[in-house]
Image (cartoon, rainbow over all chains, first blue to last red; front, side):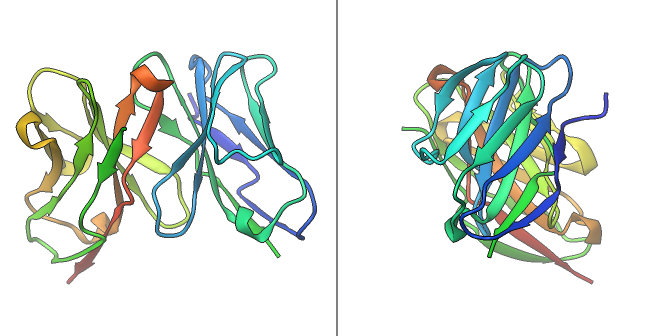
Length: 112
Length: 114
């Protein structure tokens, strides 16, 4: 078990470009979460998958954001037409049942 | 609505001194409670969790936390702080009846001085 893996660790992009992040959860975990964290704040919930089904999305997840988990394993988070306000740390976590969430190292996005 | 409050934005303690980080939550059912620690530029690491049973829970790195239902609190403590404990600490509640989300506080930044 290598824990939750996120790639890339850092991404710098120009405003208006599209970016995609990947998350590989712990293999036996059926629940996968995406969070966003800005400086000085706690993680804010974006979306949640149980297996391949996306069961809940936050109002923070605008139409420019889309997340997938096609085979119930890894997940991708895409941001289209990035804006400076999208600059943040994007955290992925996974869990089993009603247990604690295990977090990845995060992807730091900077939009210039 | 579910919420977590960490009233102390920043705390400074001397190495070897005791530590208590405060956490209050609002949740309509029996909560699952967590403390996570985050070093700069890193993800979150679980320190300890409370699901049920003994209200005093032990975690990693010598941390403990006590669940007090009457006060809606889950304060984190450590009897003797080490310089390596300097980090950001987040309290979280697991809201299983609202889509399996974890709600986080805004965090407490801990500075340890020699």
